Length: 615
Image (cartoon, rainbow, N blue to C red):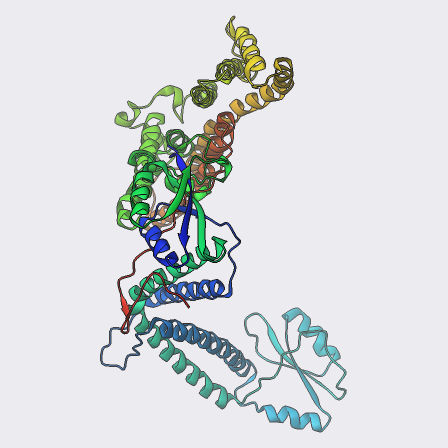
C-alpha cells in the first residue's frame, strides 16, 4: 500500500545547521526537496571524488579473484584512501598505455614474422636513395596472377589467406591499387626487448593492483563517507536562506514517523510546520507491503515504475497476475524445474525478494506444465501413465484440439483481470457518484467479453448480454465526470464512449497472447526434439548421443531465452498497459528517498571519518 505522507517545513539557525542535518541523517525519514538549485564547485569536487572512488572499487573487484598469495615477495602497502584511489587510477592509466604500446609492438613483430626476420629497415631507405622503391601489400590469391604479368613483383608464401607481395618500381608515384603495408619503426631486436620490458611492467602493475584488493572494505567505508559529504552539500546548497541567519528546508515524511520527528525537534529546538501535501504530484511515493507481496519489488524496480501518490499500489495485483502469466507463457514443467534448480543453487547469491519470487514463478510454471502435460516439449514424457493422469485435456499441449477453449480461457482471464481493475476503482470512488460509472464499466467489460467470443469463436451470446451494454453505457454516460453542468459532463462521457469501447475490445482480445505464445513455446520445444531425435535414442551410438545432448541443450536454452523475453514483453505489458489503463494508473510517481547518513566505522591513518565536515 502507498503510505500517507506529510509535508514539512523545517527552520534552523546557521550556527546549528550541521548538527540539524546530522540528526536528520540519523533519523532517515525526511525526503528533502530542493528550494534553490544546488550548485557549487565544492559539490562538483565531491561528486567527482565519489565517482573516482566507485571506479577504484570496481577496478579492484576485477583483481580480487586473481590475488597472488605469495607472501615472500615485496607487497605495496598504502593506508591513506585518497592515495590508494590516486595510485590505482594512475596505475590503470599506465596499464592501458602499456597495453596499447604492447599491441603496437606486437603488430611490428608480426610484420617481421610475415616478411622475414632478417630484413633491415635501413635497406629500404638505401634502395630509395638509389631510385628503387619497394611497396609491400597483402593481396588475394586470384589477384596476384594478374599483377605478376604486368608488374615487377616478388611473391611470398601465403599467410592467413593472403599472399604477401613486394612491388618494385623506379617511379615513386607508381603504386598498386592495394592497401600499403607500412614499415615498422624499430629493428626486430629492439622490438623484442621492448615487448619483454612492457610485459614485465604489466606484471608489476598486476601485482600492485592485487595487493590493493585488501583495501576494498576500507574504500567501501570511505565511499560512504564521501557520499555523506556529497549528500549534505547538496542539501546545504538547496536550502532556503533568510538574511544569512536562518536556514530552512522543505521535505516529506511518512505520517507514522511524525510523532518521532516532533520528539526530536523539541529536543533540538527546531522550528517546523507539518501539514498535508498541497500538490500530490510532488509527493514522493513510499510503498510498504507485507513480505509476501514485496517479492514483486525486483520486477517493479527492473521496469522502473512508481505509481503516483494519489494512484493505487498495484503490487498485489501485479504479483498474482504476473505469476499466472509467467506460467502460461513459459508453460513447461521441465523449464520450471530448471528455474527452480537454478534458484536453489544460487539462492545465497540472490536477493531474498528475488529468490522467493523465482520460487513462486518456478512453482506456478511447474503446476501449469504438469496440468498441460508439457515436459521439455516431449509428448513421450507426457504419455507416461503417471504424468498422463494429471493432465487436464482442455489445456493439454498435445493430442487434443483445444484451441477454442484456450482462446476462451485467455479472453476470460483478461475479462476477470479488467473487472478487478474497475472493481478497485469502484472502492476508490465509493464516496463519489463516479463509483457508479465503474459499475457501468464492469458491465461493459463483460458485454465486450461476450461480443469477443461471438466474433472470434462464433459462440452465441446470452440473450441478456445486450443489457450489459445498455446499463453499462447509461452508468458511464451519466456518472463518469463530476461537474456542476450535468448535460456537459454527460456529453463528454458519451463522446468518449465509442473509442473507449473499441479500446476495451482490443484489450480483451490482446489477452489471447497468453495462449498463442505459450503454444509457440511448446511447439518450438517439440520441433527441436523431433529434429534432433526423429527416431528416438534406441539405435544411437555414444558420440551421437553426446552430439544430440549438446543440440538439445542449445535448442532448449534458446527456447527458454525466447520464453523469458516473451514474459518481459507480454506478461509485463498486460499488467502495465491493459490492466493499469483500466485502473487509471499512469505510474507518474517518484520513489521516496529519505535523507540518510550512513556510518562508516573505519579509520584512515589516525583520522576517524565523520559524516559531516566543512571545507
